[in-house]
Length: 491
Ligand code: FNR
Image (cartoon, rainbow, N blue to C red; front, side, top):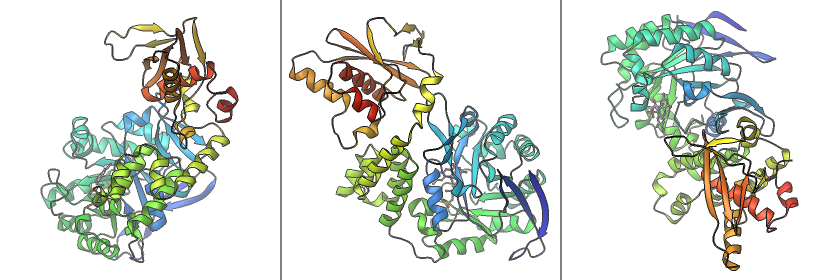
């Protein structure tokens, strides 16, 4: 349910007589909640950085609203929504490999804006309908200058295809119950920039975020706050000023940049990527290690992937890469390894065990049921030869390889098997991996017999480990009981 009302804008410093658009969003049985874009300090959308842990930490330190990383419509459209009862999150999952494309939770429910990369109003509306009960607003990226976006007619390409941009915004405003915003770059002149923002305002958007650089300008170039200032004067919708991080080292610099733009909302990207405690209203920036420790705890609590966690931590310790700790960090592959550097190894281990005990989630929920188990394609062949891996003389079990089961144990199933083979002078096993969409299964030949797991893994490495696990189970190097206990065998 959407109620739309206009109210005089109190506390508005730059446009005392303007009006504020207030959206009342129904929140699934919870109280109706207002979301406005006035007087807000906001975490900007950032690919890979703006995942759930960073958004929650930004809110914890004092950000008023948080944008997700840009998610492309074609990716989201395939996803299904599921409530993850173990993590208490809502997950949007890609059924082709079980990966989580967007994860959110109650803590950010009325504060998270999902940013969409799109070039098509129909797809945008479909995605909007899929997510609108779980996010506070939907934003369209009209500022990304990257080749991938522009070639697909997304991002900054929409600023030169304004009819398309308008069609997208109008359809979303018409069909969705949540506010729609867009994030743009400035155009070559102030006049053109004002004109386009007026146009978008007429489509009914709730706010426009403006990155104060032109499409060919890079982060090292100085921004143009005067463009934003002129737009703020000329339009009545909230304008969110962005692009000031080059000069932002502490909280008061955020306010300085906002004032330079005469906007009353401001959006921060790189300064927050470096140290997200920049949002603390008391202005006391925390030591980066304190921020990392808090960030890692949230990553563990929400089972963030190791690769995403590593990417974000890396941007916080950029200047430490040549130190011993920096090098240790660069070699990390698991969340547990990363956490151990900041003395959170035990915390990570205990949590991962706890999640596992609580039951099914993640890959296991989606992979086996979605893929027919009989015919698969051989990988990397243009002819897509069909192969039946379910031969009669193959030993199969529905066993999943969970990396978290081996956190404290350096011997993965493959090394257990290889060590055993070496000790007993048996030739090394031979692995043959098959792929279906983005999922993998491996057939293993060892000592004249063949072994495979019927469980589809998300990558080749895991598939090989899964097959090795089946093999060591059959030859008695690991007990069935232990695999049931650690969740590897599906009951
Ligand atoms: C970005 N930016 C960006 N913008 C956007 O609209 N969608 C996105 O997904 C991303 N991704 C992204 C990733 C990273 C790592 C960075 C540093 C930036 C641009 C960003 O939101 C912002 O517009 C610019 O960085 C300028 O703001 P700052 O950095 O000066 O505060």
